[in-house]
Image (cartoon, rainbow, N blue to C red; front, side, top):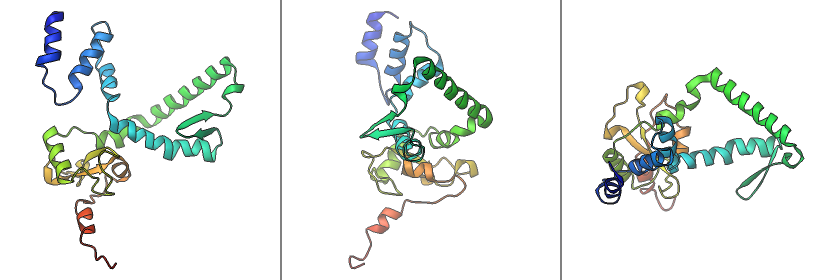
Length: 207
């Protein structure tokens, strides 16, 4: 394969169902022609809007509130957080605190293992593109629990009867949920939200 062949493939021959191919090629080009699976996966992750939005939600509504409102360690102006003591710290002190944070992270991961990410692994198991399209089309591109549209908050395809409880990978067992509703839903029960929004359309206007 030479430059001309690569250029022709990327510009004219590449058939895309997602951003995966150009991201992988770009990663290899920027990494002197070779890259680990993990590094390529991280590059793909950087384009996953739903993941970014999910952790923005975590930052603003969970960890940000704890450190700002409860602990008074950080402050917030608009969409930016500030570490209150930062300007008073020497470079040596900053590095020491960074190492302490690394120790806390590594210790927690050693203690809990992969279970700390289980909620995200379950909700992001691969669903075929055609199936995802049908689920979102049926849901009219809205969360079937809270009704938020897909262009406001990214939607995930969720098992109604959880996979861990034997739920099948079938269209009839999928529903569209925003990442907030999906993260709050337990995998120990199987609420079906698909009829909720439709039922709102049958409300008595006098009620």
